Image (cartoon, rainbow, N blue to C red):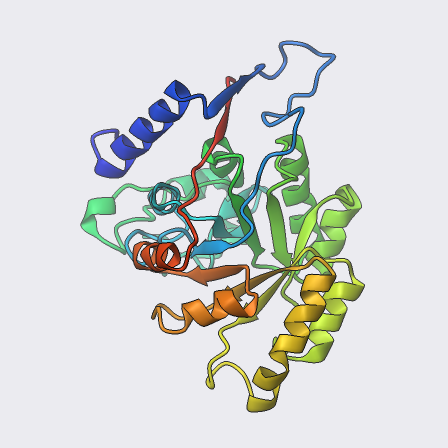
Length: 312
């Protein structure tokens, strides 16, 4: 999309303001000094990350085409605390942001992501299915996402294949780009093994459970030293009655172990206040702006994104 489009103009203004007010901290370009790290977010002090708030599911996916830069920019502009996107490997092993293995639902192409090269994926229109306004939007790569993301917003990478190679490739990019403090893999066992074979510091969200309301799901998350867990909304359609009754105890166990709790809910705002008050850290939704307003009512401020400027 060109800079004549509203989302990009707002984003440029936001970054410009961040530079003016000192929220955009310059760091050396890659390759300038071989004795120093090339990580864009190398730092002398920890970056403050959100304790709780709103997670944007595939970006602002009710108002923009999912898993695209416009959806991601809109979510950041709204002040979300966590961004969730989906990741798959192309035929030439490049991680791209795509939920479905088949590209036909969200692009004008056909075939599986794994059967197409990055060059072929980049020719696809990933916006027109949503609205003619977004015609010409392309499928982003993980590297492109990292280049534009603030350094203080959680990045939830939902790996859509149980694949060690996917875990390794994603982990390598996280470590290379210095995103290990904020990016985490929502993944199943093979992907987790691949990621942890690269670096034990990789943050993991447990997604592996036939029933995500079971005590075993909580126990396995703690036992495997995972950093996040993903639950579903606590309504009658999401959880059996006995599991809902046990949730305060299970949440207390997770909190004691230092596990952050994500909860995927439907688009309705009903009950979000109860989720936060029950101990859920991040409520994951599609329709971002109404939930951001509700978060403010509940004492959760819009997050101010901060960048570290990296010059290639």
